[in-house]
Image (cartoon, rainbow, N blue to C red; front, side, top):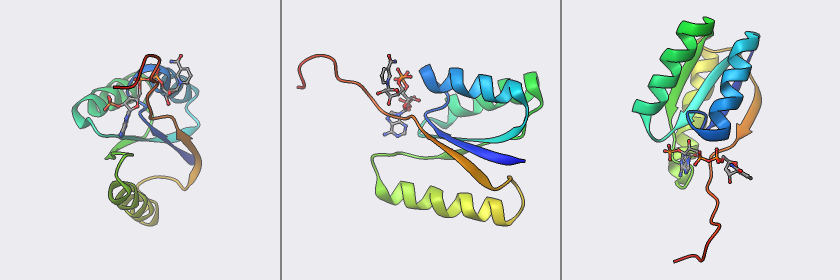
Amino acid sequence: MSTVLITGGHKGVGLEAVRRIASQGNNDLLLAGRNMAEVKAVIDELATKYGVKIKGVNLDVSSMASVRSVAASTRDMVDRGEIAPLQVLLLNAGAQFLGPIR
Ligand SMILES: NC(=O)c1ccc[n+]([C@@H]2O[C@H](COP(=O)([O-])OP(=O)(O)OC[C@H]3O[C@@H](n4cnc5c(N)ncnc54)[C@H](OP(=O)(O)O)[C@@H]3O)[C@@H](O)[C@H]2O)c1
């Protein structure tokens, strides 16, 4: 068993990826996002539907302090056996600016 960490996995392309991974049932999931209410709703949905082990962590990728904090807390979760060792990082969180930047 291993863990897939995904940033922005509660919305858009990331959510579709997370649903697919959860349906396969062979990985734990760690959802990293800055909107924990939305993250929790997806965790509840996937845990109920697929019985997958899935947790959330509060991450704002625009803050290096937040990135470092999540790196440390993730390592602690692995060390405590709460999640399987990390195997995959899906660094999906981001934005596209298709028009003029203002
Ligand atoms: N959709 C496309 O056609 C397409 C094409 C090429 C590339 N991409 C890339 O694929 C990725 C996902 O796109 P999408 O269309 O699925 O976008 P989306 O629906 O807007 O989802 C973006 C995700 O990133 C999160 N996010 C944004 N800024 C963040 C921050 N500072 N800290 C933490 N999380 C943050 C959002 O969280 P919040 O809910 O908190 O905002 C959301 O969960 C992006 O990197 C995008 O550039 C998309």
